[in-house]
Length: 266
Image (cartoon, rainbow, N blue to C red; front, side, top):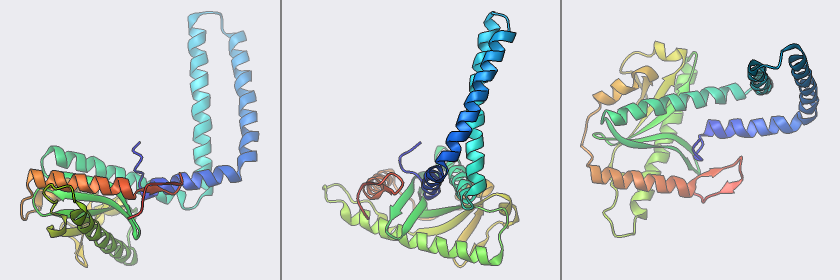
């Protein structure tokens, strides 16, 4: 996993640590009971099964199944007791799905590249994508099973805030380059906000939906949306400069609160 974790991944990690600390005694008791049952199963297996190669295979299966069962029970208990955990799981799913589409878009030469999980003082940017024609696109990944008018308006406001953060980052990396090379054209490129919807709600979004200047794109149609975009072309050298500057900014500014490791501040 990349050390540049998304907001949802960081929140999941922080909540799981907090849940483990609160329930450490209960977990230790459960682990003791499961260990006893595990040892009993091994003893029964050694006694009941003849000493043949298949017995050691069965022992390996029991070991693997026991570890998988313990991890599954812990994860299920965590999701059942932490109300917001499932929201962040869905958020992480949405961001990973968007990254899969972006990989396809890059292979098909629709975008030059992108940078995930850029942390600023005002919040995170899920994906900042540099298209081959049309400038920068700020993608805000969302997983929704249903979306009413209020939640759509909230997503549009969130996308506008992400656009503002992206414009600030683009201007920062443009003025920060003092090493004598040609400056990345971040400050001169258009920055467009878009919400990528995953989950059941995406099927209710008509093609070309735009609310308050924010494009709403079903995740399964994101690749086709990139094909329809146009504008001033971005050269390969300019794209390399800008993407490199954005990655450098992310490395400098990124901080994982769960780790407590500070790598600078934007």
